Length: 269
Image (cartoon, rainbow, N blue to C red; front, side):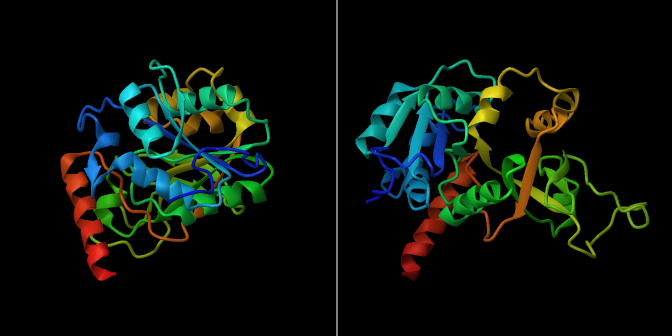
């Protein structure tokens, strides 16, 4: 049973605080956080993985009493938030305010529909933000190896500078290979392209500022929240993921895939 940060009691505020937003309503899979996976709700799998990280505190943020009841039943700390937040980042900012977190606290946003997310990635993104004192956000990426992924607008691409900081995020295939993309390629000859992984670590002070900003023009065009931070001159550190990042759950098919994967893992032990 996780014990490091299951209730947030006497939490070491010098460590990262993991916040797991969990909404009941989902257009493609209603009640997703409570979907059963091997006898436990999906949100409990996410919480247990987060508790296995080096975070000092793990909090589930929800606006739904059904989720609250279930989460408190397995020992999680729960913060109730408003239901009208336009984005997950705004929900995180409310949690920062409700918990009265110090401005220097690192807050890691772990999506409630990623029951296979390794704790190592939570630790990696936290460490990367600790190391880059000039960055307000840290996130992760991994190489793109397939042409289909590169040209898929649902796969977000990121371009980095020499220090590993983000230059830009886009749904377009960036960078554009001028010599070889004149006709659609069949293979990618290099690993120059990176897929953004939506795991973020923030400084609490940044989240408090973020909610006062209007959406940026590029953010509205691309429908990518992180472009608001770049628009306002904040640095985003991007590290190459130290291990694979299994896909989250958006549909019933995704849920069955996760169930099958965990069944196989249990059979291999």
